[in-house]
Image 1: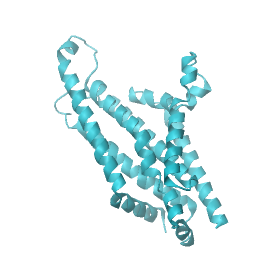
Image 2 (image 1 turned 30 degrees about the horizontal axis):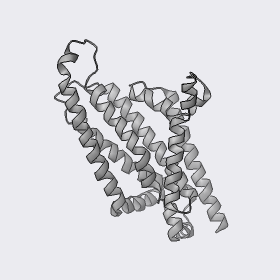
Image 3 (image 1 turned 90 degrees about the vertical axis):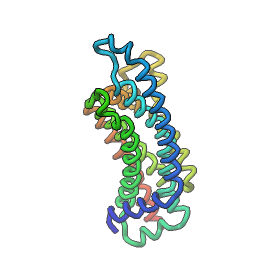
Amino acid sequence: MSTVAVTRLEWRRLLVRPLAWVLAALTLAWLAWNFTLLLGGFLAGQIQRAALPDGPGFIDLVGVPLLGQLAQLAFLVVPLLCMSVIAGERRNGTLPLLFAAGVPASRIVLGKYVAVLGWLLLWLALTLAMPLALMHATHFDWGKLAAATLGLALMLAALAAIGVACSSFASHPALAAAAALVIALALWSVNLGAQMAGINGGAINWLAMSTHLQPLLRGLVSSTDIVWFALLIALALALATRRLNADRERG
């Protein structure tokens, strides 16, 4: 069985399980409501901003804040989406069947990760469709929107990798979701103490996810930020693969 086959199987499971549909419906409804509120505030302040030559535009006041709200929802949505990808297989006793079929642990991890990531990128695309629907009615800062979208895609990819890793270590999906949530929040806020102490350039700030996402949301693309997300994804998937290899050896 190839990685594509594992991805296709996991994608079909996501489509038939009600959890993914409920999460998509509830979160997109919430984001649509907030998009309406942000758009109303933007339209109400157009006259005041007309006097400012370099004032914030549609992307600054509507597009980026909407993506920021999606980022907040992702801390809850991604752990719930990933909790059963491997822990569910282990709990239902179907993980040994994948091992018996000769599927390497790396393909299992990568296939399930790609399926979850595909769902998350579709979620991101549907959110982006809201501000993009007004692209012909207002001025668009495409560079800032592209940078913010890249930042959200990298964040979703990192959270999905953490979720898959936690699911590979947990014996129950609920434990996997709780562990992924705690780790993600810890990575986001690990530098809060340093910032309160006035330290903004230390190693602990580099470890924080917020340090690397916030510049992208402001339109600043840095190779350092991209590499940080890539390293986190690679580390999480490597740990998940190592755990599944250990399960195979014990089995």
